[in-house]
Length: 494
Image 1 (tube, rainbow, N blue to C red):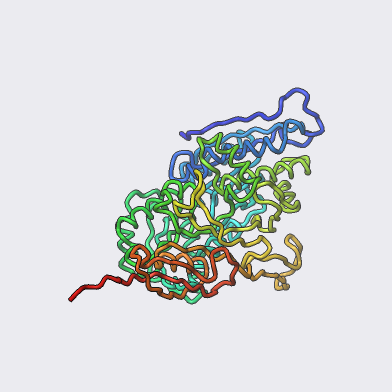
Image 2: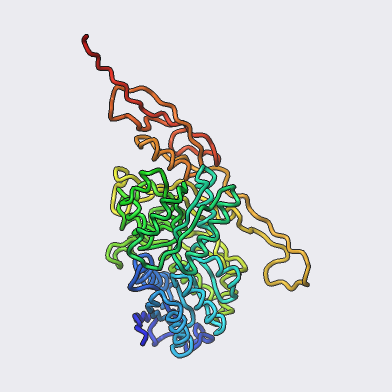
């Protein structure tokens, strides 16, 4: 028997609602279903927080004042595709849900994607990562809002390979998401001249990574790519530290890291990690205001990019329903693609014909404990890739999507080349080996110049750098590190 986590939010009273506003809304109610992980490894990065995000979107849309009644229900898909698709069918057939939101776990999302398409409803994906949702499983009823495995691979993965991390071993979660992230990152590694020395796949939500980490360690690969997420990522990083993997000269690449993961790891363990995200709560005044409201409702937890995606996708969906005066799923998704997006968390953007939402992506570095000034103050922004300059993104096509064309006809696409510069990380006071890894992961080359010092505390420590941290520099630029080398000045009397 399926266990449902139910939450209903009536945001408009039945009395006094303008009939015109609901003239073409089925049953007079727009019903949203948040299908998420409420009890397992993705609960912190999605879970109840995704329900809160949807509620805040409905509130900010002002549905009650506009005469629109919106209800929200939620359920735990238990990270099982059959459970998730079963809930989706029950919702769409019997409970008259109009749109399904979130759905972390790509296997579940791909199953639900087909159900929603068959039923002609709407699917707003924030939690799932597989790029197949806009590839071989592309649907006219789905918008893939926040991020995907292609963006992660071409953000973090590309930066690491281009700066010397050219041999990889993948530690991969054994289901659709992990397979897609491994596939997309492996393609980037090979494209940039690197090699994949091996790979191993682990069960979802495993507690013991020892055998997998030993295989990665014995491969001698420079980079161990963690193609997993949530609790699997944090457990792998913690256990890798116990095995001394980083101290032994190998580096970990967290290919999907959330702020809740950093919180769980703690800054002493997570400091220096570099990864790609679509959102950070401390980017600007609007994101900070949202985070304050969100945290007050979610035990002080700050929103992840998945929560931000649920909020923004829900807001845009409701705008499309309002403009269309209908909650017909296929038509609403088409309207969402037609309308420019604009919300407080992602700003202005667009939705591609295949359903992929385009917005800036960010390369972040986790702060050192000494740099963090407040709770959840964890990230330093290293580079921003604008939506219209993100490497590999198709920015224009002729003829446009949806046009009729004969087999064999030509379709012209314009592909952006990516940003020309990014900020140089400040690595002063770091051990020079860690500093080199940080800079190389951010896309730069390094050169070390040793300077004699009579202070042993500066031995092996970066005293200064050129250019200084924060300077904008081109990819693959050379950064010179001036490193202390202790020379004793003590003399002995013969």
